[in-house]
Image (cartoon, rainbow, N blue to C red; front, top):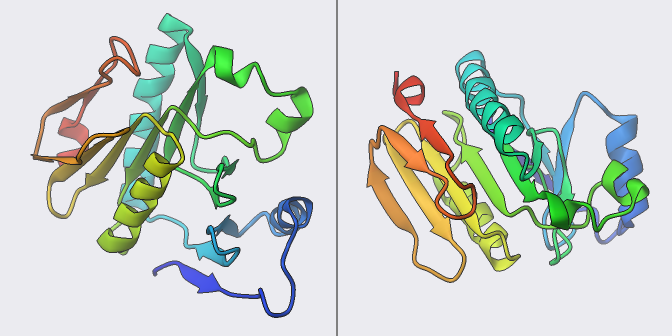
Length: 192
């Protein structure tokens, strides 16, 4: 099952509050909104991808609890990017000092802030081209580091702000570099 994009712009252009309410009124459906204002309906993941997502997320939680440098978010968190799009990366992280600049109300809704780090783990039905475009969108909205993990091709694409994309063939681990200090993601579980 792939994502579905619906364009209601000729009928209604949803405000941020209306989009937020649409998501709240339909909690069983995962929505994103692209820069054109089109609504993207995201399908649920399968068991294999869901399991890998939670395992990856657990590594981030353990690291973040130790270093206490930022705030982590799962795939159900929707961010309002500077370009106006609403996106929900599989894993995202924001430095604590940046997160703390938002009011409690801003933090509770769809935070209007680009994460410092994003990770997308492709499901078997995801489009590589669309996911790469989403990664480029993150970078053009000032995300500093992004990982696109493609199990089918056994590749990881590393996106760094202002630098060319680096493609790794079946790496066994990834370093958080200076964005996620001391973080190492063990990819053996992902490739199994």
